[in-house]
Length: 136
Image 1 (cartoon, rainbow, N blue to C red):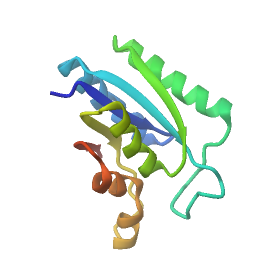
Image 2 (tube, rainbow, N blue to C red):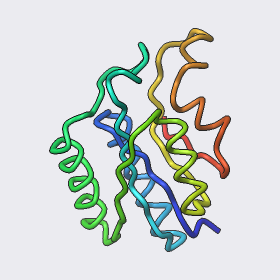
Image 3 (tube, helix red, strand yellow):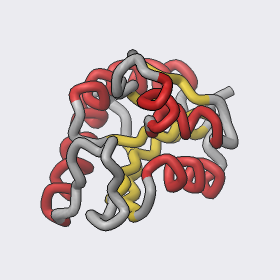
């Protein structure tokens, strides 16, 4: 059912917490797991971005630690690093790799309509070529 699962990661607590759900889904369906990190250049960053990951070392460390965490669950993951607007890149990569599911943590930006409309999570839900599982 879910042959390929895409898991976009960043340095947020929500991303780390979603990893357990990702591991369960991948093990249950014996899925291929792709871990994605999107680097947003400072000039493209909008006001909703808490922290722009731009150091190659920080990104490499994030991807390696995510890969190692899944290895501890007995899951071999592939990693990708891309640059651009996170929501658009996530959806483009999902389409490119033929993902059957995107699993991501929810990073709430408040309960206002503006905050919800501007969130990466909301944009991915609206643009995704496949189902999206949001882990609160």
